[in-house]
Image (cartoon, rainbow, N blue to C red; front, side, top):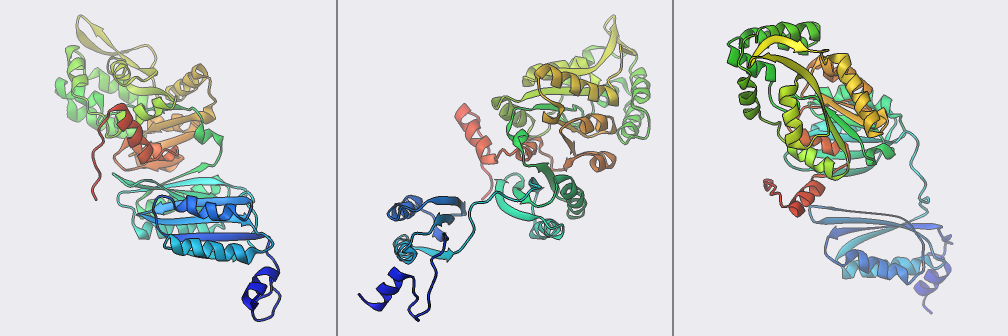
Length: 420
């Protein structure tokens, strides 16, 4: 038996020093991905009867990174030589490191940090990851959630409570002009949830009352009051009654014309369609008008709807509201009512809105999302989404673009091809 073989069998290096047998081996393969790589690697490992403690594999633009943590056999160098040989046959590079720990759970304070950008620059990623490091947290894994029409990545972070991480990253996100959502890494992210959405300037583009005002010839007056109300500068109920009064005498047929002219926010149908497949329930809660929102709910297959009702007499608007106004407090109460009807906790609700009258609803939800919102709303919400695509919310819920497109293709929906 030659010296090299003796060293391999006894654990003594060829320079004569004793090399104690490690407890574990971390084996990392890198190179061009192709079918059969993982099978080839584990076919070799199977011959040594080792136990798999941990494994992760990613493919980025055709490049493979495969890491395997295994128990070390007594003659561990023979395993090292065998995996080196199989790597050469597969045209991969391999690194075998000894003495790594076992597959312990990650540290407490686990979060999902989702970063959205269009584009997502290296400067922004550097700043966000830098702030994570500054507070003593660790990034355990990074996954791509989407590459088109926005870039979305999900960072698995541990070591710092989510609420502390959220405060730090919200400030950095504003500086870098990207969206960052921080959520606890728990079972809620994977369970059935209730989504409660505002309508005007969230589910649909524009404000329905302003569309009606255009037909009534008072758009300028109504728009000015609407803007002040959404910024939180004036009471919502008072502003609504003031604006509705200006619509007195308008032909009720204009409600049909406004509905027919509505434009959904980009990605709205994809968001609803995808989450309904997963068993989510949907509600829309609006400071607008039930004559429009009820039809919208029917069109999209939304489960619940709450809005104000315009009084109509002899085919014309009277300029008054029927019943109580769905205001800021009313939206939050509707969220709680719908959650109880569905049978989910408030922690399992997601609220989406853009105006000051959505603040109570966003606060009441387990996850409050400010969608292209006014500054006062962005500052108060759990997270902000400022890209113009409503289905970007899917990435915050752990759903990838690839999964959405695959489900759509199976159902016969055609998804536009992304640019190369």
